Amino acid sequence: MAPRRVLVTGAAGFVGVHTVATLLREPEDFVVRALVRSPQKLAQALAPFGISIDAVELALGDITDAAAVKAALSGCDAVVHAAGFFAYGDPAAVARMQQTNVEGTRCVLTQAADAGMDPIVHVSSYLAQFPPRGKIQTADDPVTQPGSPYARTKADAERIARALQDSGAPVVILYPGAIQGPLDPTFGATPAYVATAIRDRNWLVTSAGRCYIDVRDVADLVRATLAPGLGPRRFMCGGPYETDAAVLALLRELTGRDIRAQRVPDTVLRIMGRLGDLYRLLTGRQPRIDYDVAMVLTRSVPCDDAPAVALLNRPFRDFRESMQDLLVWMRHAGHLSAEEAGPLAAIAMERYGNGTLNTDG
Image (cartoon, rainbow, N blue to C red):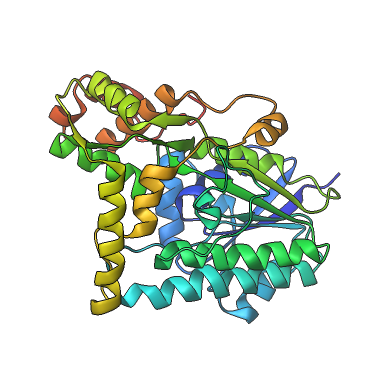
């Protein structure tokens, strides 16, 4: 059989570039086309994987441009929609998040369904269903009404994807938890939070924790969902649930740094979140912490990842391994100094000696 052509949006982003790299390891099964605005940005994202941009078919345009999306989909068999935009604290970015995360999703998924793509993989977020309705978050939990701009756009995009599923379109939705891992061209929220905590020697500890998923597991799961003919499906992929206290202990061990535990009662964080919402309402500016963020910090629960793990036919990566790989990469990329990385600095020199990483490691 001829390889299937898969369009990937957001190919220069964290999940997108790992997905592209994963699919390109199977040239007998997949041809990858990337819808991008900047080929140079994609080339830079692929370089640490040792992949030339020539290995990818390029389609130029924006996901909100219907004509560009239609042209990019032409000749494809399936699509992976991993594009998105996140900004925190910038009021001007709210409109862009709405346009990219909601209208862009509508444009890509609707046209993919009309063009007969099978499957149509949509990388959503566990935030679209937050706060959890029970002690375990599942892929069939209802979509919520978040208050923060970013989470609200993810929920709105989720409604679009589920409406297409209800109509019978073969949309596959993935719900990652806090995504981490090496080779992040965007240096996203989770790695930045970890780096700041190490640098400032200060880690917020609540009574709860969070689900952390390695980006390589997300990419492998995307690849596993690309079989056609299976119809609409949803997979929670939160990743291992780790308490704040356990993460702090691991960061101390791996870096050798005396990182303090900043203990704030859950109720205090939620009050701060409510005050943050009021600040946003009165000023139009994004606060440092709003109620949605406070809820994520204090109300996160384990996720029902069993269907995703069964599809992968292997467990998700061990959290310790994933965190070490993240910190080693952050040292190599300059996000941590040698002092901040501690004993991991030597591993970074060894592992990235030729400028690329064996992402199977």
